[in-house]
Length: 115
Image 1 (cartoon, helix red, strand yellow):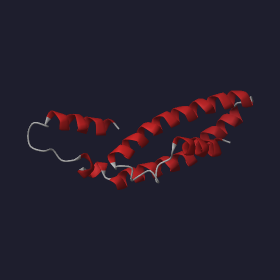
Image 2 (tube, rainbow, N blue to C red):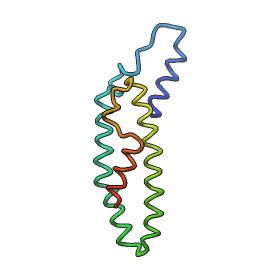
Image 3 (spheres, rainbow, N blue to C red):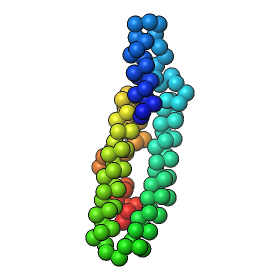
Image 4 (cartoon, one colour):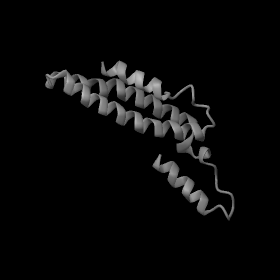
């Protein structure tokens, strides 16, 4: 997201001169790259988050403590993912709405991994 912001900021700086290329014309900003990034996120959740939660349950005997920690992790993931989702929805004019998670869909997905 930082790269997108930096690109847009530089485009504004050059807006009085020749037309700068569009963001979605950049090789690193193509829709296929964003779709792949979403898939990598899903795979990382299934692999790393599931493993981490399993270790928490193993090392911490109190289920309430694990629950509190996992809830904070889920909320942090949701906050960051929603920023990504909003950027790609805007960049691709909603074309990725069927690819990326909705907020409720992501919450359900994370709950299925963490339980």
